[in-house]
Amino acid sequence: MTTIGQVLAGARQDAGRSVADLSRATCITEQVIHAMERDDFDACGGDFYTRGHLRSVCRVLAVDPAPLIRWFDEEYADAPPQPASAEEVMAPGPQASVAARVRDRRRVVAGAAIALMLGALTVWAWSDSASQQSGTAARIALQTAEEPSPARSEASEQEKRSVPAGAEVPARDAEPAAPAASPDDTGTTGAAAVPVEGPVTLRITARERTWLSVHNEAGDNLFVGVLDEGTTDEWTDGRELRLHVGNAGGLRIEVNGEDIGEPGSVGEVTRFTFTPEGVAGR
Image (cartoon, rainbow, N blue to C red; front, side, top):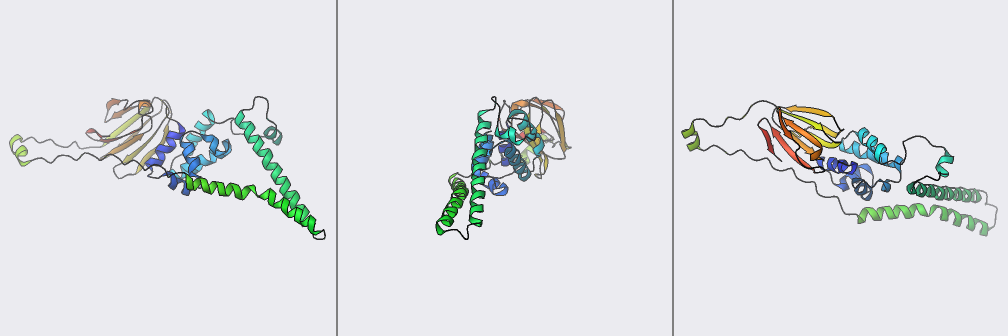
């Protein structure tokens, strides 16, 4: 079955972008993008931030984020997106997950750091007439409270430099060139093959939730997104349709009314090209 990570990776490759390109366009670190494509959403820092990252990535890749966010809420999120009181956030019940307890501890540490910083600022503001020793102590407290922020920034920059750039975008398979008819063939047979004229129609029925994209010969996006289980969609073009699918075993294909069946195995990522004659290549 296709995962959200596979959908993101497929959409990124289909858009011709590397992980480094996507990182620059979204201001999300390459490390986090790699983690999202592995379905490791803990790297995002929580459900709220994961939804924001999904929206940012989908906006750059021209993909509708709504199905992915709904998918995340159903299968990955710790709880449905709803407002929570401060008491609920700071005091999780006995059934809270390990990830929730870790996030709560982070909130407590962050709150303590903010309180320390505000206290230090107050002392510093009212210490003009105090002794030099008191002023020095206040400045030390302020520096201590603020120190983690630049350290984290420096660590983040180090991660950006250390993480390798994303894999190269796989090139589409070249379309087979039609062999030119020789003079002898045309002269002797008198019945050379005539190219099939007319549009090409592609009809897809999803047996499982599957990511896919459909382009025409000019490279225009006809569809980029997720087909839910049981959904059927259809596209038509005068010359050619190109399909990129993230779960070849999770759908059935009809081309010009002919049932092609399942184009591959479950979880297989593959590409196809269709013309009025049928399947032209993959």
